[in-house]
Length: 91
Image (cartoon, rainbow, N blue to C red; front, side, top):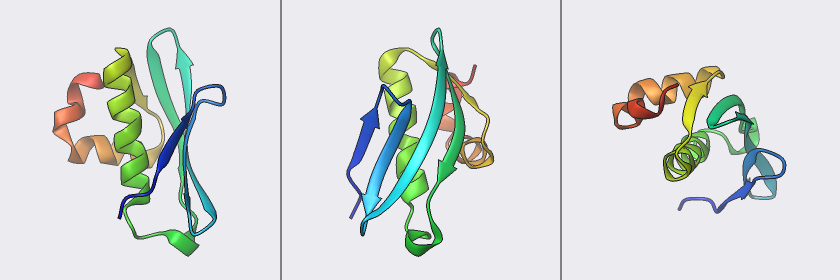
């Protein structure tokens, strides 16, 4: 079951709570470019695809908003390489 992901626009963050544990993807927004800076899923809830869900939600939001994406964190970079259907979003 996929976690419920909340987009906190004010804090530039996508977050999910899994078993009470906060999982986040942080980004910076400059003009229409979203730079993914940080993806964190604590070990206690790791290995469930939560980081992938957070990243997909961020990419889908970028597409909907007309933003380009810079995957500055290593996880986002690897995720984009595995998902060429999002290659058009690269800044």
